[in-house]
Amino acid sequence: MTTPDIAARRVLGACAALVVGALTLTACGGSANADDKKDGRGGEDAVKTSVAKIAISAKDGSTGASINATGVKVSDGRLTEVRMTVAETGATVPGSVTADGRNWKPKEQLERGTKYRITATAKDADGRTAAADSVFTTVTSANSFIGTYTPDGGTTVGVGMPVSFTFDKAISNRKAVQSGITVTSSSGQQVVGHWFGSQRLDFRPQEYWKAGSKVTMKIDLDGVEGANGVHGVQKKTVTFTVGRSQVSTVDAATQTMTVVRDGKTIESVPISAGSAQNPTYNGQMVISEKSPQTHMDGSTVGFGGEYNIPDVPHAMRLTRSGTFLHGNYWYNQGNPPFGRQGTSHGCVGLRDVQGGQGDTPGKRFYDNSLIGDVVIVKNSPDGTVAPDNGLNGWNMDWNEWVAGSAA
Image (cartoon, rainbow, N blue to C red; front, side):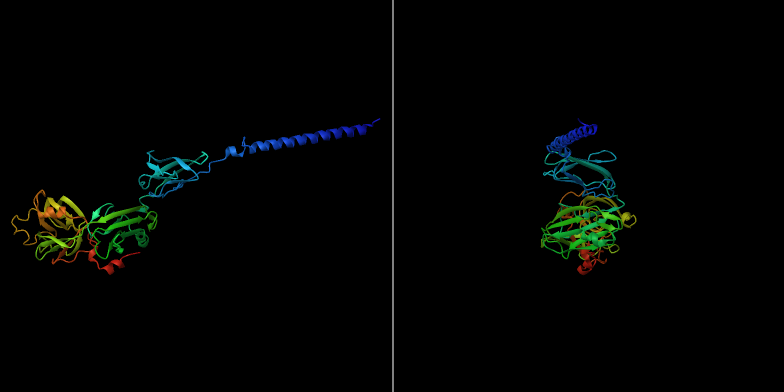
């Protein structure tokens, strides 16, 4: 006979066994679910992100972005699409992806002080997609500087042509800016920069460039601080060629010009230099501009109404202040024969005809001259031209030139 207490304990024991069994089954069931996740059915691998990492050089929300170095790169993947637009107008900025799919750059230099948007997508080796975007503003004109320079890339110039920069802002950190520009020649000549004030920097060798040499100008000013809070935006390499050597000497005492090319005298022609009242500068001058015809008005260079000639032929600029070597078709109107005396207001004239046609000394010299050719004037009653009046730094002693370098 079983007592009530014994019966109750048996029932509790049976229940406990059932509970243990249930716990065992539950544990087995949990283990099966974990294996499912490892199989990739609804587990961690199903939500794994792309390993491709996109980097846009201009950070989202940034200002002062480079107009040269902005671009997109990807690691562990390939770019599939990059779109760049002007934020204000939506205009597309053309660009291209490199053959390996890792880099994208705009086709042209960006504008200063402009807001842009870049959106980019890429895929990793498993085809998983990554995306990135950025809205940014490039450096403003007020906070940047640009140097206009001569000569331009791809040109052929005379042996006297310096490399000359004119900056649109005053440069106080001259060493940093000059260090950001390197000028080298295939001739091996040493090239040194010289500052004329705070906005002009010229480079030249001690002697004229060697004929036939190649000159390379590397401009690496992007991000260089030229003055407090004002940074450069240029980054490019420019190469030009030095042509044959032509150096012409004007003798104001004999009113003649002798042209020497590659060491040989080509011709000697009569000229009309400046009058006794308005003599021509002495010194080494470089042809900086050429124009088949130009308007010359004395009032623009400090004279009164002495002359106003609308069609001066074959004009070649020698100084910034207005000295030209040009054709002269009006000389014989009441004057002695050409080459007997100087009658100009400081220019050097060659016999020519109105309209500039025909075989005249003026046309012949113009056709055979390069920007960068040297014209030397001697025996004039005037002083020597200032080194910064035009591209005429050759009139400065080399030691003084080097002393004006900030690097």
